[in-house]
Amino acid sequence: MSAHAGHSLQALLAVAVFAAYEAGAWRLRRRGDRWTPRRDVVFGAGVAATLVPGAPTFTGHMLQHVVLGMVAPVLVVLGRPVTLLLRAVPKTARHRLKRVLGSWAAGVLVFPPVAAVIEAGSLWLLYRTSLFAAIGDEPWLHGHVFLTGLLFTTAVCRLDPFRHRVGLGVRAGALIGAAAAHAVLAKTLYVTPPPGVLLAVADRQAGAQLMYYGGDVVELGLALIVALQWYAARGRADVRARRARSRRTGVPRGARS
Image 1: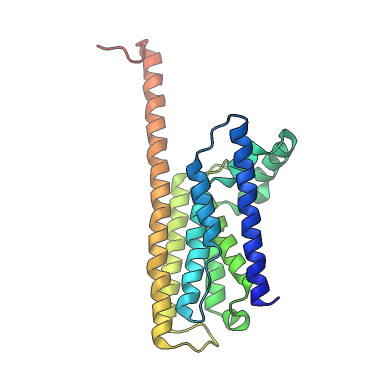
Image 2 (image 1 turned 135 degrees about the horizontal axis):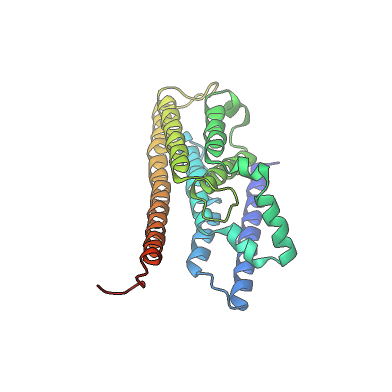
């Protein structure tokens, strides 16, 4: 497939995905369910980010991959597409989807350490072996970068409903591990190019710095999402504890001493 045909197919797929999302959101609102427009906006921004064009330089390539593999997945996940799908589809389809999401295979894939190994490991395989020299900027590679980034972001954020529960500590640990793997990879690229690839020193170093600092920004955003979830969970736990104490002491909630 030519690069032009690949980009055209990518654009058509992006339009179809966003149209399907909006159809689901319209169905919810039509029957009176609440679905905040903010989610439409961030999901649309995430889909649009997958269409960022590449450039003939390594720096341009790395910019595209940071957007595809990190920025776009965060925006898409914030749109909570799985939640929307489960609420918008008919009851029979919903039960089938829940069985898939609750399956053993899905639990393994969205287990944060596994998702981190898949995402970071694929980048190391791409840039520290001869794979990058062999395949270059093929359109399917961009899709792979986006999907592995989406899997990792979904596993760490867990904004959509999953039957398999994972503690915040495991999610934070997977995020720290992936961030460290990205940082080390970027440093190796700053020193040496991918095997079999000739790059101008300034271009290679600029691309490596973009991977390093751009990754830091997005990973800080993911850390903020996890921290806010931890804060909310602690708040809910405190409320439950106060209610339990009220029941034990027989003091009505809201009563003044």
